[in-house]
Length: 430
Image (cartoon, rainbow, N blue to C red; front, side):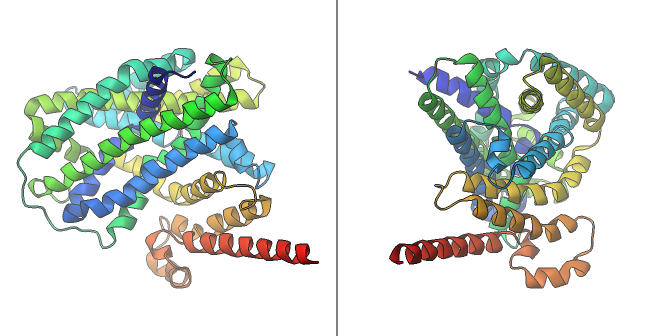
């Protein structure tokens, strides 16, 4: 039987893996700009940053495979291209961002060192942890996550109980949609696809005698523990950002706001706590990301240990090169990529949870194609002016809000299932 202790260790490890750079700096800024609409922004953010990642983990619990299995019903070639694309993207964008945030919040205020040096030392340590992969989950779950959780909860509780300013009005016209799209920047739905694979490999390696049903329960319940923690932390940070939003410059950066909030809530002690928190949470995420990348390519090449080491090394070198850039620069680059990858990921996650009779191969293929096609305008919005895309925005519902793929996919899913049901009924009668 799986003990409660084991489930919490795995759950804490998943939490630590998700809660990294973007997850720490994004919620306060959302609350800061949302003001009294913090609840609406929070609802949208939590949907894309906690609900879909949880569904991804449940999908892994059901499939007990790799990310390739998530897209196999579209086609084997698509599944391979999508998976390789994800595993090449995450060492280039979300992983280096953890080093950039660590430098800006935990290193730069105290030491006059270059971001390149921070990035080099940071990813050298990450590489050491990744090579000792067998101990990573237990170390994250037993030691680092409790420390991260206690620091975060302390800041949030003190912020909630402390004095409040008069909230500045919201700057968002559609707070729920803004929150939902901002949740893309956490990479959490994609992280769910990556971390689910890490969990499957870890259980297969360390719990050989565990039955399929026990593995499914372990992943599902550990995921619930992790997402419950993320839910509490995210909503707490969003609320604090809104509660204290009158005390900061409207044009303040994400990292400066986070530092300012911690200082306002806890004084100089808060700044020290924040530095420790940032370093730990970003580090755990970087380790988990690179473990996931190395596991994937190792599996592709016959469980080769050499491939694991080479993949980890290349990911860390990429992290060093990209991690020296500013957080804002890395986030801006990621916007267009996520506008294309996130819809595909969400569609695959949802379809993999549905029974076969509602989500056959044809449904997979049509919905994924629609997700890609109708996400292209939003992907291009980072490179082209709004005027040049205006004709597409008029034709495609919700595309101006970054959700042009939603209605076509919903309608196609309903229509295809109605046609399938009608055809089966007609065949039965004949």
